[in-house]
Length: 383
Image (spheres, rainbow, N blue to C red):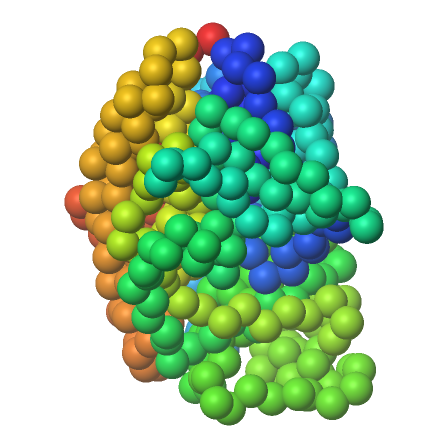
């Protein structure tokens, strides 16, 4: 996500950029699907938003809470920033967001995409000056003015740079289910509560939906062969019987939060999950990666026409701005996770509904759902 975003941010400014992708793109069955208005404005400035909408993005209109014994407890309209295509939160499958971002980047004349595996970094005089890659049986060295590691929570770039990270696990994991069938109400994020816990269902394009179950770590249930998983969900919430759920389309997401000790060294920086991984309770992980990539490009581009010292000043400025923004976002998502997923709040449907009110303190600075204040560290996008 961060790598494809950075390729668009740099490519839209005509900067020669090489995006190195793994040989086979991962299918992120356990990653976020939501993009909020501040992030959509940035994607719109790159010409990506229209492509996402053409790919079938769903504009979300409601947040809903139901209790097994009471039915719908609360319905909240999703916040609307304005009446433009970027004004309302959208849902798009994570792998489609990555695919559309990459396709848009590849169409830019200054961007090249290669399918290869990065096997190491090139250094000279304490500075990163490129990467080693392998494609099949062929190994090569590629030199660059600056290298950005966008290789995820288990970043090999971060590890090779010797940058420590602070990582915290949670007691609750998420079991994500991709399902056929629409949610009710439509175009909604819908939490279903019972005495066992939470099943959250939200809309996806083309008549599909996605759900996740909260699962206590150390008590993972295999559910056995199909249709045991569907029977478990429908047994708890008969209203979900319309969804066609298969175990083969389920993925367990091990929830962690991670913060790198630093975001740069001379000639190299970290972006996205390589720098910061947030609990999904805040619904801001992708937005944090995309806005961070946008800001890194904004700072870096003027420095590329100057010397290496100017490049490093830009990378230092990126860390000085984005690391505190990431800290605030991670802390806010952690606080929301402790409220709604790491507690027994689900036993009190009214209290749970108050906690997921989009006007409540979901994100940093007490901002509501979808406001994504970390994006405010990024410049106002221009066309």
